[in-house]
Image (cartoon, rainbow over all chains, first blue to last red; front, side, top):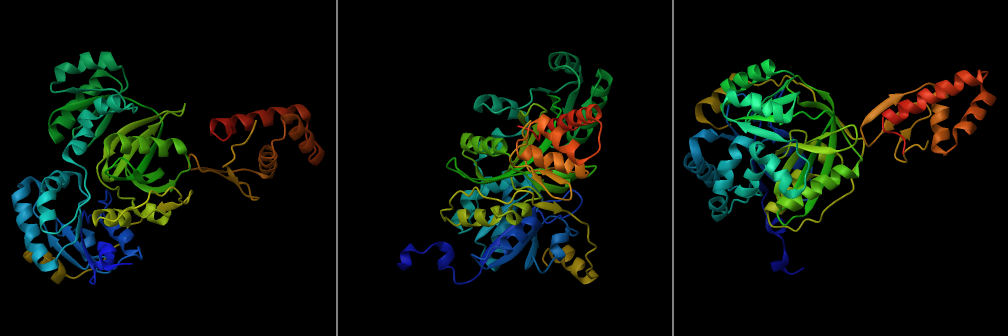
Length: 358
Length: 79
């Protein structure tokens, strides 16, 4: 092979430096630690992992066998300028090759900074802003209609007085949802009103009033190449769910209808990067897309365990490698999450809290 | 009355549906019935084989088989 034909991964003499956020491996975990674990298991490259954190007690900060060095970054509400300044500082020290942001709330800023980061030699593999916004909860029903994907009907309301009218149109039970998080099932007008005010107080307006779909919840992790091809798709059913609705155990499934659904979504959106489709399958087998998360899910390590290492494939795509779509995976692979008391010293806590580095 | 091809079973009576992620356990008679359904035996054939193997009242067994098949159907295990 001629030297100019070598890929960026082959050309790299040193380790590939990958910065990963969402190190909060807590009861409602961020995907960062699972993403790092997957990348470290890939034998195609050697990596140095940089953790990007928001708070001093994110468990991933203290997992030194997974994370080589960590830096705190400004909260997403701080905007792109402060984030860019911080990333430039980290880049000067670490020479970052790839950044994988994993929090919904930070993605907007990272997408905005994508081109500037590229100029510095920092690669990302993120959706475009219009792809990112099209799957927003508030626009999902219209998105589904446009692309022939089944999404429960919803109405977006800004006033509790609108509740009665939309309830008549959709009929009970209804799901009252916040624009970012939370969903409450309401069987009566009184319950819907109560849920409206509760969610408004927490997440503000608008409120989404959605048709209730009864069925089995399925989650699908997918990786799109940005040209409409799904590089990897793994469907999973939650076997154990926490009181926050998060999967504490799950199993990979063998059902082509879920694969086709995800393939259709990736093709319709030309999705670039990782995503998670939250699907409700009704008793007659119809799959409704309930939500689309624009990043890898916290259970993403299961994809690596089942034979399709989506985070490692994303790194290759970010570095400009051609990655062929894969279809084979192990069905019946189970993950069981567990809580572990990680012990550290006050000096470490002091270091990350005081200097923003660990 | 045909069991889906991808349904996995063990001799110990463990049944796993990879399409839904559900798993079940059944007793030895249930295990026998499942393996006969896998071989695409008819209800009549199942009844004859089980009656030949166990001392069971025909009417009672027909009813039990009917219930068992209904359960398999409910759990999306039949084609």
